[in-house]
Image (tube, rainbow, N blue to C red; front, side, top):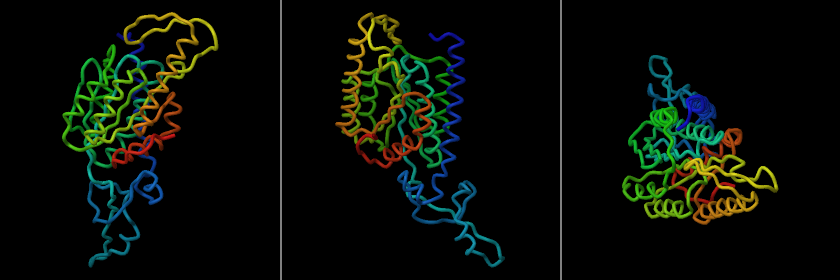
Length: 301
């Protein structure tokens, strides 16, 4: 169990980067310019009369200026986008204790808030899945509700000894409503579990994208030679050994993990720290839009 000081720090950091992700996502002016739209796979296809709930930034002022009624008042028109149709989105978040290492949870929450803010603007509905010793499933949420639920769970210190992707694969088998899925996790899962999730998603025709949060020294040795004691954050056990041998095993696991994703053409993004997450905000949103539109293409470079 996390101590109170660590928990308060994790909670505070998560809320800060959740807010930052929302600000960054909403400030990208998605939907105003055709060039911006094409970059995220969006395109406006029609116009409709402005409604109170519409974003004023989508008003077409040129068309509105030409639409003067008999009383001399301007009739406002807003753009209708191809991707405005509502989509069902599955968000699965790994809440195992390995996700608490350094700023991995901050990177996860930042990327999550980017995506959920865009999903809110597109009027999507979210099924939130929290991965732990069992699945916690919260269906039919608004994107803002899903983010709040994830933050509240993190701030309560609810992290688990381990989480199983196999449980997520079993849930995918029960899903009948067509939608897309985003998984937020790390490399701390077996290759068999990963393959199970990928295969089930393909069979069920669920477009799947993965955001991997990584702490640099989990996958790269801090020194070239020596001995080390590795602490398993999930079981709190120590493993002593030669640093080269230990990291060779880790390197092999990570390489196979990536190979599976690339072989099965699962789009994924690896975030090594919060700074890299922020620098890659457009790539994160672009991947989400590809998944949302069901475009199963190769992983991002």
